[in-house]
Image 1 (cartoon, rainbow, N blue to C red):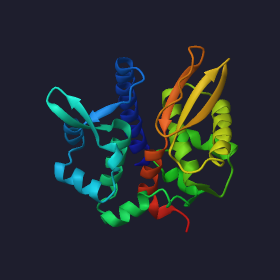
Image 2: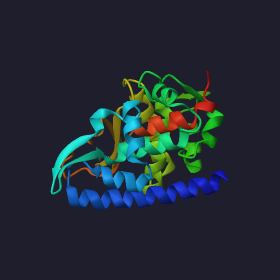
Image 3: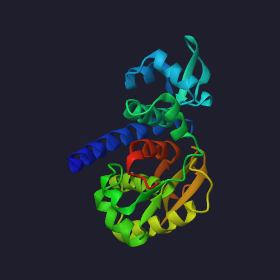
Length: 239
């Protein structure tokens, strides 16, 4: 059931975040990349699929990064973005044609509204966070930006011991900020300063670099998460 799927997603998030933290320790502030060989092995897709999706503009050409390696020139990708994108494509490829997927994933197609009672059906949004969402952002329907933020902060809540009061405050302020931003190509950073919880949004996937007095709790790119939500919940959005 939904509870079991949410529990499984939580375990996968914990494993992914542990791997991410380990890589961050090794690479510092460098962009976290995945090689083409590792990408194909990890996702189970073929070389042909990868480049067919590139031609269909499902995977942006700028994500194909040529770099020197001991074997010569190799292709790398921004790890988190490409893994989220491929998983979203795999989840939806039996429901939509490549042309339909490209349209859904286009930045212009982001005006959807999702009814409030649909939040319970969204695996990415923690059931324990729903009371805080309803208390801080009471609405009949939510935008794609809002449900993406709810999903991102659900991941944060799974990994951090944050009280409901503080989560309500983060949700309220985060929704207010997102309503002033254009598009969803932003990274959300949750941090503590002088004992207070804050969040900030930076353009693209590069997180904000703070001084040592700031305690960063979580960093969540929103762009690919929003595409995942769009693809998965096309059937429950409002017209």
